[in-house]
Length: 155
Image 1: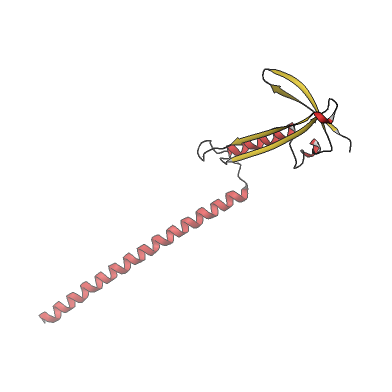
Image 2: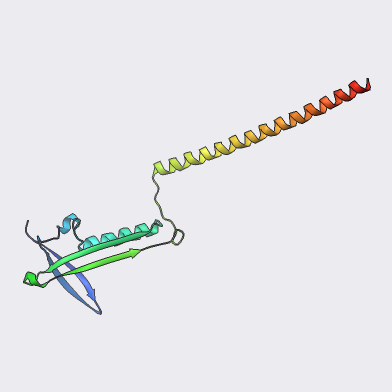
């Protein structure tokens, strides 16, 4: 496959200049395939930035590290250099409002769990009520037995 030219705009200090870099067979994959696993082109980097923002909105801790290696297309391969792009974003659990899009399966699972919890609570309440009834029956039985004893001693 011939070398594919990747063109993007970068900002350096206060001036913007157009830079064109060539994807050499020495290490970079085709940018159409999202730069593969060895590095990241600018398009892939911005894709990762967007994904990182989505993860932040989902209250996850995100650590994203991308290495973008390129060689200058202005001529010789001896003037090759590399850019290391490190993006780290960490958020507390309640720092950003949650914006989750839940699937139907997740919603159903949550509803089932809530129903199970409610059933367990109801069962516990029924058990407590049954224990209270048993205690009350025992008390009533003791009272009756005491009355019988009294009547026997009187008669």
